[in-house]
Length: 340
Ligand code: KG4
Ligand code: ZN
Image 1: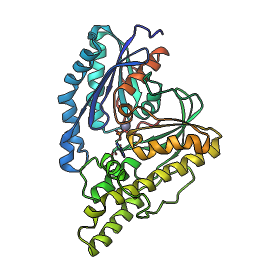
Image 2: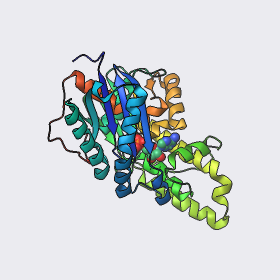
Image 3: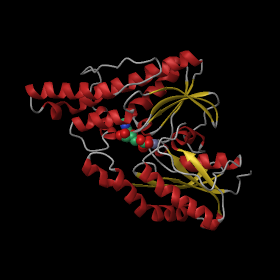
Image 4: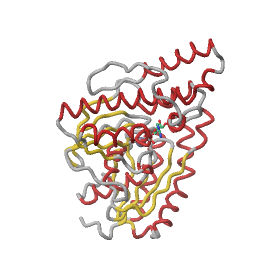
């Protein structure tokens, strides 16, 4: 199917961001994200509160996306929505809303895998972004997932490595919590890290399979380290925040890079694309740029707004599936544990 004059609405509601975006021929006309501040008070996402906030936000967010794209809902050719993985209560809001809207407008409905969307966000036509050529290795790093994926075509993806426990974003957030930083702590660790010495403290890198990850031990070692040092100096954390964050970020980034090096060695593929919330991290972004010179890789880093959860990536996958006539069945359901 042709997509020149085709407008597709993407809707994302898998976790705590309600988002809507309009795409036209690979170009994003609008991308709106409503963050849910409420979870900061609780130090993490509260599923019940997340689904309620989605219900409040979804209509205004969609209206805003249409208004910003300067189109009427009658011009939409399809509705794409996140069907999983994610929090069930959150997914249900986007799924039900999208089904009703598609039915009301009489247009096809397209279900999108959130993790696939983090990878395919690279195909959005935008300044500062070039699409990776197939085959490539995707490192998807978010609050819920950490995977190394071999991508041979848009919808041919094979997970070749993943975390056996926590996701890398979770590791950032849990370590940040131990340091007394508010949720989500990842971006704050990144901010402090930029002023600190990455070699000030040493944290262990967990040993698992060559392409797999483990992050739960890192959280425990940060906890013991902070307890030990605080017993000697009660102001240790506040006095050393930048150095602790820089050392922690250095450990995580070099661990991710070790795994990518193993993946390149194993597959012979030297084109690397990162995706997911943690790809907003300045350390991993710098490491990707450095790897081009150091190892001769071709690396792809998404634009900042397409790293953390957004609906532009959902609309992008919607457009790719629309071209193939790959639509959802009327009885499609959300799936919290949807696999890649
Ligand atoms: O992809 P995402 O927005 O949501 C999920 O699908 O999980 O990822 C959110 C995760 C959070 O754990 C957040 O702390 C982390 O991405 N994150 C970062 C940065 N920005 C977001 N972690 C480290 N450095 C950052 N700059
Ligand atoms: Zn995500």
